[in-house]
Image (cartoon, rainbow, N blue to C red):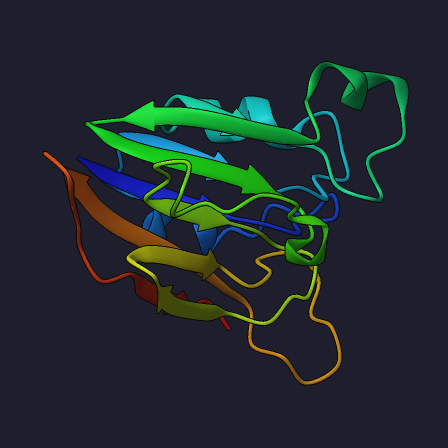
Length: 152
């Protein structure tokens, strides 16, 4: 299963996002959505699971949880917006991937058999950080290496 991972759109769904997500079967949004129309636009590409981030304080955002645990194609995924808020031991809890956003810094690191993944930001550019998202192949207890797509 190919998934797309985005974060920190801050109300901007860049046109470059759509071709980068072509062929994904599920999209994960790690918060700071920023506008009520972002998730419906992503759902036109593929089913989308999202959490809210620190800027998502409007009434439309209340339906999104602050944390989400889900299973896709046999892989256990835990999402939260700010990794510093993680208060559990993902390896002990059987989590395969921890996805976060918030920093706008793309990152991928394996720790204790768990992939910690931050797709960066695909919304407005912050400082000199790249504008990125991730695609990832998962399935049958196998997590492939993330592919970072630099959009601009």
